[in-house]
Amino acid sequence: MATLTAASPAWRYSMTGRFMAAANVLTAAAAVWKAGCFLRLTSSGTLVLCTTSAAGSPNKDGITHYSLTDLDTALGVATTYQKVGIVHKDDVYEMNAKSGTVTGAMIGNSYGLDVGATSPYTCTIDPAANATAVLKVVKPVWRERELQDLEADTLARVLVQVNSTEIDREKAAA
Image (tube, rainbow, N blue to C red):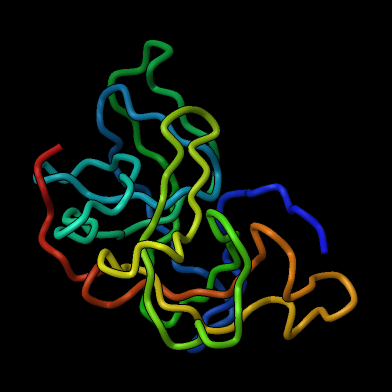
């Protein structure tokens, strides 16, 4: 058993294609994120970092994109076009649990998204937040890499998909 270091999600594969779809999208003024973060569109059509799923309102702004590179417009850039991945319901991401371990019983269930409040804004799946479900567990990584990952690992890695209701959710105001 080991305590792993949480990192933002990594795109692993799509069930319908070999590559992640990407597009150049306008970022919001003062937008900041790191590679591997989930992003959302605002009502004005600009990208910002997703927020932690709120109780009673699962990530009301949806998850529409995935950051391929770091961005820090807080350093003087008002808005800019950024190449980002487009999130599809068939995409599978590898990410860490926010806390605790990941069990086989979690497969097929959905849980909340937790986004770190400060850099590096690590996005993790929160097994304690099933009332704010935005990410569906495909399978624990320890089922694929038995010698590297263990079921008893704390902050264990898991394969997830973004729930289609989050991808299709209406854009919210920034």
